[in-house]
Length: 141
Ligand SMILES: [Fe+2]
Image (cartoon, rainbow, N blue to C red; front, side, top):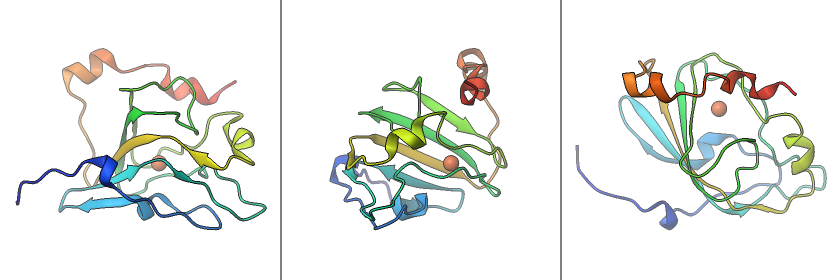
């Protein structure tokens, strides 16, 4: 319950030889959700590393990503200020071509915040009015 602010630009990322799963970017844990920061960082440095994240489903949480600024390696059609919502259980990962594009990349310049909630989210009227109804189709070429 203690109120405080933490500037994402003060967050120091961790990197590894191979891809580290998102919880390595964990900044806060609460009783209802977690917050992870994705900040500029060197990519995985093994010779055969694939920097793009793997496909996954969040079994126990809904996942909201807020794209703050920079280049978002795993996404097409995302710009600063975008939000994405991946409901629990929905498989998601890099969009077509992004995994291949990531091979050999040395660093990312992304700033993004991820919130994983332990309970399902209910979209507000504003979300219903502004959501990109074609987002789920963005994995199709
Ligand atoms: Fe995810």
